[in-house]
Image 1 (cartoon, rainbow, N blue to C red):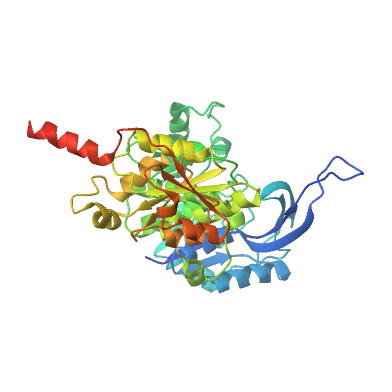
Image 2 (image 1 turned 135 degrees about the horizontal axis):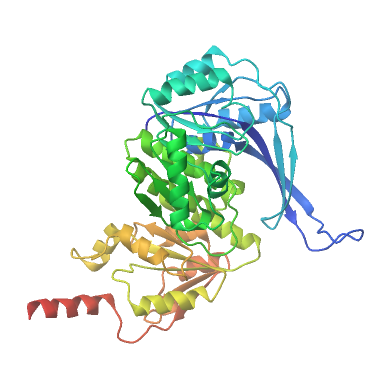
Length: 466
């Protein structure tokens, strides 16, 4: 992975998460009992943290106040391996306090009025000018608007450095020459006076095109939340990248930062802009599915990935399971190869989902399927099998495992219910004893008669031979 320089405004986010089971006697508002407080980097500092957790060498040019909040942000980023170049705020470091109950947001309180930054240090300007790849994460508090900083940014964007600019309505316009500008729909409308209220593909395409021309950018991608993103590049052809559908309540906080970091990283590593947008949509969707910014762990980058039974691409499953449990819900899991998905699979998955509040599919990897089914299997590779499963309304997430049985991932996910088809007996399931260890239950559900992947393959071969 190539190094990344991030320029932008830092905030300190503080989450107060407790339980709310009653209303206050003096007002019709919930009482949050025994909230636990957790501090984490916010604003552009969250983008720097996420980039470090991706495994990148990150230099972060920002402005922090000489206060406890600023020192906390610097410490959290330093612990994650981020090199912080602080050009200083004359006032307080901004703070956002989110009060949550059972994982659901109730209230946000903001501290810290915008204040001027100090004179940028030579180290900050040198870091920008030497950047192999650059992300400007503008939160409208002055770093990207500073005259000296903008001069350095203009130098690198015109010089061909891969630059992604994540704008803000209160911030500065991108410097000319950015490779990709990433406004969300609201920000795009703010910048484009000709935009319409209805975000049809035609309207968003027109807005993205006008902004691309106005900013002299190579491309503009408008992010649209659950609807994905629309990208317009140099040739003007709109590329729409849908987002994977998510079930249940989600918190989109931080999704824009996750999108911008993923896009900047992909461009830095040699992807074309359209590929970077596709990767960014998938990264942002997985980030939201995993709980968003509120579930980002502020460990070191190495600790964030160490010792987990769930693979890198599936790590968002763990916080999703925690969210369901935090709400008092039931976690259901099932497993299998799911090669050539058929009506029996679909029926089983739909019935399994009705047993609880989320369904996690533990899916055999390609290597695991070959050991179990023979050298001619799977017919469909694991990436495509995963994509087809995730397209089903019944499926909330998919975890891939390499072993012959899924005990390893089950031990981490600890589902309340484990489901298999009726061709199994609970007593014969190797997973049943494992489930019992934490009070879970293994159950069987009926299959649709006569449906199997093997019979589909055999029937297809008979047709070919005739």
